[in-house]
Length: 325
Image (tube, rainbow, N blue to C red):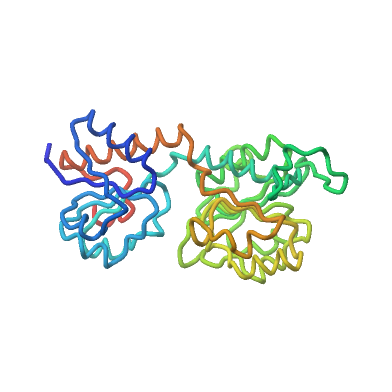
């Protein structure tokens, strides 16, 4: 076993402690980076960096000349300059699948909040109020749900939505099989991204489960939101910039759609005075969809295994820039 300098850069003290203790039990030491001091100074000698939501750009990478591996603590790697890492022969690894069920459950939670017209305001949660006659909910049974991105999470959402009796459609990149749609993807139909428009026109709910990249940034703009039914809802538990923020504001303000529920935001944490937060029909949770004990346990297990492989001279199993392998 080679002794490497491993550091963790995380906003969660709990996550840092769990990973550090787990690796210590395996004979590997990890140092937690202080958020109160200069990151570049603390990264000068790092060889393996475990990161959650921090932006790892060219400047930060250049300040870490010994860096060999960046391990993201989730599936999304849009905050890491992967191309530059590849050019510097730095492996980038992520954690796929670990929180798919947690995020899927949270997605259905948001859909139900929208369907049942549950509101919250400064005077207290509507959970604690008597029924308000003018606020009427709706059933999910028979409603049309379009899932954007049929990866692990999207499929788990489809499984659960089927139990509610929803009609489910999938938009995802090929290759995919049209055989056994209800058994493989749990959807009634599946199409490629260029067919998205025709599904938006008919959907009651649209749920986003695709990574953020150059193709998906601003995927939902004025045109797409304008094509949705006025009674439709948009759910986003992926990345906020997949939806154009100004277009969403206009869609809610002008009642082009009935509402939206996000677990992600353009700036996290959001400014409490942000204009989107003023809408009663905009629900925001604080990027907690995948933050469950089960998901954390799976994440720690995958990261720990990859770190052990690295100190033993092997490559991580979940490398993104596989061309380095």
